[in-house]
Image (cartoon, rainbow, N blue to C red; front, side, top):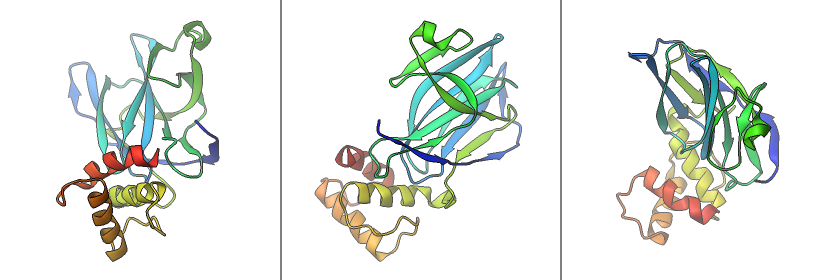
Length: 201
């Protein structure tokens, strides 16, 4: 996977009660960074800790998880190894099971008994409806454009700044990349991100 950057990024949260359906609770995880991320999640169900990964999430995208109501929950996220500068982590201090490839685990047991490694997850407020993975730059609603700029640069295009601003140079480079990748001119930014990932690899 490469060398993890010696830097822990932050998360932002909204302490709004999540929608409740029976004994489950909707929980939205959002990528407000300029990186394509993958994350692993963990929560307590029937008094046992369960972990699962990986879910890949593009910049500017949210994904919905259903978790047990008011259950302790945890997240670990890292950038895909397609970006320059090594892997970045969004982590904490709670050591739970994980693996390099996709996994599902009952983490109450010793991880090594399940032939799994560990990651340092961070705790999330059980009542939190939305958890946003963020960078110090705080792209927020500009994350999709910032992510596109970063991927264009990682794929070899001449992008000098990752700032989330769709100026003339960024717009011109987007048009160039769509043409190179044989995408329709009206293709969405997410479609272009998906097309750029294998090029960046």
